Amino acid sequence: MGVNILWDQQAPEGIELPVARRIAMILGRETGLVDYPLLIDGYDRDRNQHDAQKILDRLQDTLTRRYAIDGPLLLVTSRDLYTGACDFVFGLARPASGVAVVSTARFGNSYYGRVPDDADLIDRTAKEGAHELGHLLGLGHCEDPECVMFRPRTLDELDRKRKMLCPACQKALASREEG
Image (cartoon, rainbow, N blue to C red; front, side, top):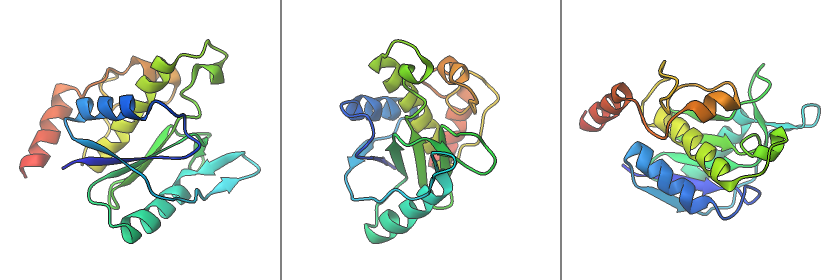
């Protein structure tokens, strides 16, 4: 089963293909870039952030029902995300609906006062995108801090992850394919 990636119009341009290729490499799945109009909901003025749950609602309603996309769907956006009481989230998945969102807002080095580097942005977007898609493919969080399925709470934790699944998560994914 392949996965679909929708790139928000405001997300960083020019890194779509490298991110899609890395996600394909990490998950061992074909990836396809899809292009559909999507209104991004959930802006909260007080927080200057978007509610990730509301974005997933729109993604589920508009794209999976109107356009009947086959397979998991990941939205990559540049909008800063939060959910519930969390100050921010790098991404969020809704496995029951097959939709996920990842924000690049905190992936760029410039956000942290560091020298901008597209390689870092591509790496982080691919790892977090693969993480959220992993949830859509049936994987849970992993305790191995180097596994893509580890839940990062900081940029350093995200950077520490390798661009691969640990052996246990690889095995779990393979068994889901067979079953």
